[in-house]
Image 1 (cartoon, rainbow over the protein chains, first blue to last red):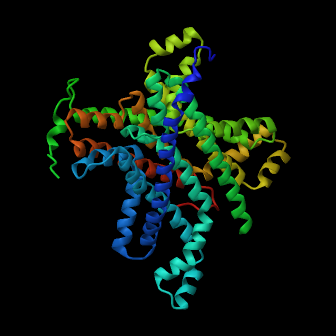
Image 2: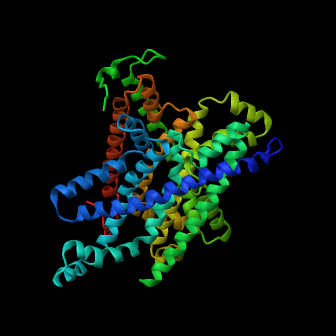
Image 3: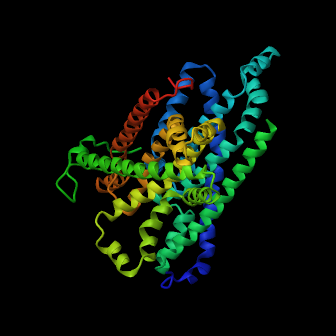
Length: 219
Length: 245
């Protein structure tokens, strides 16, 4: 079955694949941190009661959620050169952060809404402002409740980083693709990176399950 | 910003044929919808079977279901598409392999549907499993107590309830499949992402014009599918359960 396969191309291409993997991770972590921060702000904007602010946040979130990530990657990458010089990598980092913010914001909104209304009133009652109540009372609990869901979203985000293939940024998949084409051995390289993706995603999903159990016990 | 607007571009003909760009985009929409719907049929049927297997009393069956889900869920869709398109034909017996590589009709379309369908089936299976497990234990026992076999219990008691409960998450899985169908551009299916990329190149950089129509079409389709599923959800809602207005 694998008789005409030549897996000896893998060792020499490892350093390059490693670079690709590092970029995939960098993209995941940047988009996760940036996405959670912007997403939380978006969620707070929607729940703040301000009409214009809430509407703007809702429009942004709905727009991002109904357009494929692939289209967003193209939009940003193709439009950005009219304003500035940009590499595919930087373009990917910005697009992913802005795009993921919409998804994290929905998670944070659910998290915030899962906190009993009485806690917010209690915060107001002891004289805290809206932002103080959110920052000191509501958000710490919301984050903790939503850890498994935030991680699940990150799991999806990590898989989606492979879509930067479309603009030629060198992530794990693109690195494998490039070396595969260089040696004329794309088939072997695809099998190899599939195993890497599988190992990473499988461990991440195990971790999510573990967190789920831990959180469930705390409650 | 020195962007040259040209909204007339939609009515110009494409270099490689005699249709206008607008017609080309509409064809792209057709392929996008075709891939998503065909993949959804695969995903829903296989996903239901696998999701049901995961809740089965039989250890072996449950394990098969579990393996299926882990296998198709942990590799990115784009890479799975490459695996089906480039790798699987190499693993087939020689004659079949040659046929797939050279003569198979609509190879790009079929591989995309298969890849997207199987990828989505793992996610559907998880929802089906969650739906079945959300039912109280008494329902299964009641079915068995009535003298139903395991299969009958699933067919008449558990699945009809489970499916009605999981309509909302299934809707978002369909949306995901619809949006994920864009990866088919990578093996050369002329769906909307492919068309917009080509259009940017062939019009010499009319980026906004090339991307805006497919983007709006994606939004309209998502919205329409959401409305439709909302109707189905209300029609099929289980009395006594909370339903979204």
